[in-house]
Image (cartoon, rainbow, N blue to C red; front, side, top):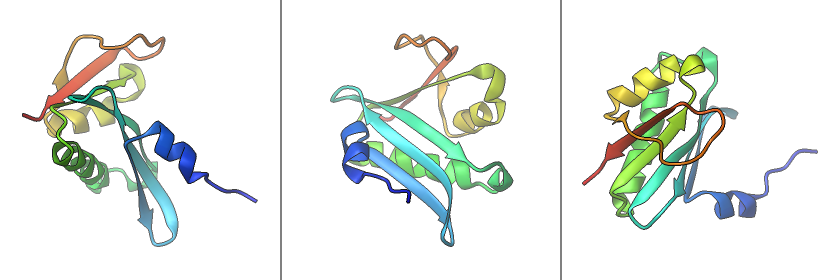
Length: 117
């Protein structure tokens, strides 16, 4: 039997959204609080058969609105450029621009930000 322990999600993320097609979970996106001013886009995932329908953009727009509503001034993200070209195009379409490395990570080689205020 499978279960998700909500309290673990609440401890890890300020926001964790799930996108469903009927009863099927098809996408997730999360916001992690870094500081009082900055948050981080995390756990962005959408099943490949749902790409190209605007659903990823819709999830990012929901996350952006959450960040604005809770007073964050900037959203940061990190990704692996060699395997994330579709996602990077979507991030740019949503207004994210490249920025300097803001954390130490072994795999990520591209860092982006969206200034909200």
